[in-house]
Length: 249
Ligand code: PAF
Image (cartoon, rainbow, N blue to C red):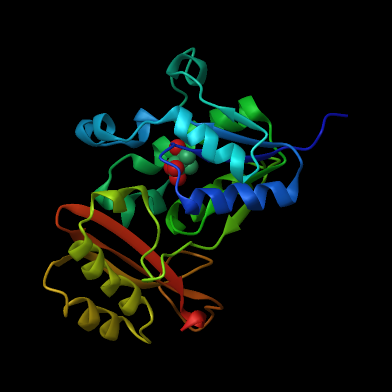
């Protein structure tokens, strides 16, 4: 019998949020594989793909220091040798993040399928920061009876409450100050309060702010057990997303 494997798929540009995923993976298994692959299929904008930060040796050092036992940076040919077997994220893949980023979640599922085939993990660890991605991956694993347990790790925030993201490096100190409005808004008790908090920050350009049912990603109703605020918007040309369970408020 082979050793169990805990897997952390990444696109590199590792920050403390990723390192928390790796540390969680290490609690699950003494064998932790971290992949670094910038998946072209999930970028709808070629400019974004070209500008995506790449630092394999720096990322490898960080991953190993957090407990990875293998860092794997496959080539495009290793991932998609015989062409692309595209997966579909369905309707949920076309709302919120998927509305802005057509085909993004199909691209995520397509690479996850290949990564799971190649790594064959027992667990795969994802951050709650990309809550819609986490939801879509969990549902896809369930529907396709894929024998991998999906483990979620809460979002890591700076002391200012801003969720860590590779994109934060593109924010100036005053942009980062403005970004704190997202955290304040997510602590609201209603969507209306969330919207009025966001409106207090002139440099924040709203994409969406909603409260969703965590089980369905749809509207909250009388049978909702857990609800979550989700926000996306722009600060100075940088798109930021964040979410928080309503119970945390
Ligand atoms: O969240 C990410 O970094 C990516 O979407 C993932 C899961 C590594 C797939 O490319």
